[in-house]
Image 1: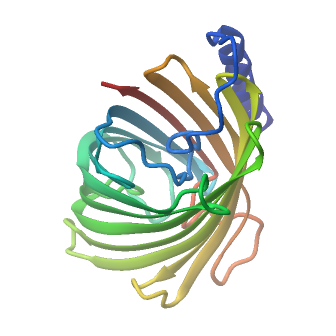
Image 2 (image 1 turned 60 degrees about the horizontal axis):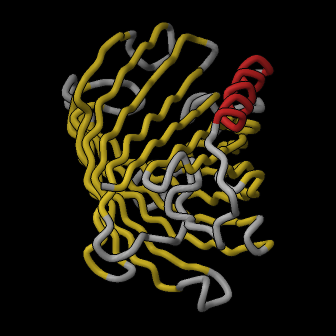
Length: 289
């Protein structure tokens, strides 16, 4: 764990040194893309178009070799005030050996497609805080955890809040999350339904005009059935996040989280490596066009 943390901060340090400097700080924050695993309440201006790539890595399960990478390519559009549409396609890489209840496999596949809709209800410049509701719908042919083939459908509903804690210096965000999912695996025709609820908090501070540093804390509870049926497990993730405004049109966000605490249903221990991973990482690059 210490080695991973050290490497992450070495990357962040090099990025800060190499990041282009600006003569004056920007006014306020644009929270649309500055967080790693959370979302902000800003949705962009009417007519904006963005291309984005998002790479998410999940590592470590049950003391065995588990590595899963997802690379998503996305196009974002803002057709109406306070309303954003994003469409994307995802490819995944799985390298799994010796994980209980998951078949060993090493594969690369097209995973699926997604549609993300966001509507801003409150603008924090005119209200005490920003408020946005988001719904991400996805359909996959590869299970993101096991890499097994099948048909998977799910939705992630998010209620996002954010507020400037110190004007032009520090920003905080809160996400409330509900994720119902349905899957039917190709081998054996097994059908599974699950749901996850969670709460996540992030705080970032401006350390340079074009650099924000901070951290994210996320807590999840997973259940069988899409209606929060039988409890399956819980986990708490914590880790650093860094945002770099590379130019007027391009940006980069880096985030890493470790499972600091967790517990699967009916079991003791300090981690839940049945329903969740030990480490998660995300890199997002975007450009306006």
